[in-house]
Image (cartoon, rainbow, N blue to C red; front, top):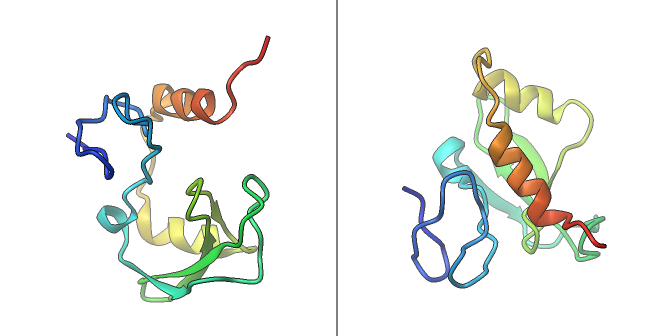
Length: 113
């Protein structure tokens, strides 16, 4: 079971926000692909948070450098980079966890009345 990086409480299935402390937890890229911070502050800005992005290098046979927001955990790929990552990372998809995707969207974009 995944735990909150801030308070260590268990995270509910299909969620990224801790129900106890309210912190949004990053998707654990280390469990998926090894990466290192290539550049702490890049020249690009997060369109969601308006903060500077950091560049991370994903360790693949063909290294890929992408931008990552340290605040909202958004990942930003240049043309072709996502294709390279997916070629090394994903086998044929048989199921999509729509509940997790819906929960992330609800958390990021709450409905306002």
